Image (cartoon, rainbow, N blue to C red; front, side, top):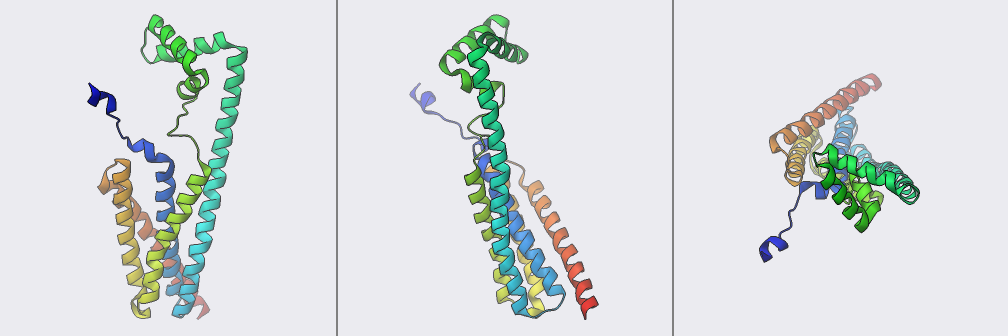
Amino acid sequence: MSRLHSHREQHATDRIGWLRAAVLGANDGIVSTGSLIVGVAASQPDQAAILVAGVASLFAGAMSMAAGEYVSVSSQSDTERADLARERTELAEQPASEREELIRIYEGRGVERGTAEAVADQMMARDALGTHARDELGLSHVSTARPLQAAAASAATFVAGSAAPLIVAWLAPLSALIPAVVATSLLCLAILGALGATAGGAAIGRSVVRVTFWGAAAMAVTFGIGRLFGAAVG
């Protein structure tokens, strides 16, 4: 019996708050910086110009990701707070209506009326606002917006993702720079797809194919644009 009481399941959704931002940041770092380096290199400048573009992409992208995540997740957080404030007011002014609303929610899930009433009374007696937040609004500790966490995870992983193609661009000879950056970026994307799928409990193969396909497409497009631009300028 003690083993049953001590058992706590670990679900992939427990990581959803930071996992989404982290995967997005790393993926964007690899794709954005790798694609930019390939595009600039395709226009045939010198290696110093390529590195400057890559470093600029790293810092600008990290700040952009952090700001974007913070603003978007803050908007979600503001909406959640507004909904909770409205629910708190309704519980204070219309407790009977809120109780009936909760009962109907449980009935809609297949619970008999009498049992639904008993459950609603017990749950509201313990934590009325928390119960309505979870069962009526669909909010929980897993889905609650955390702007700073999302911004930090996104910026940090963007830098980590950008580092790989940037280091390769620094070390590789100019003649082999483009294929080396492309190969490294695709390899990193495949690893990222596998890690993200493992952490999220999803199918690894599908995730790897998805991220590498779009990464390859982005680099192909920027390579073509860089080649055309370089030819036009030359």
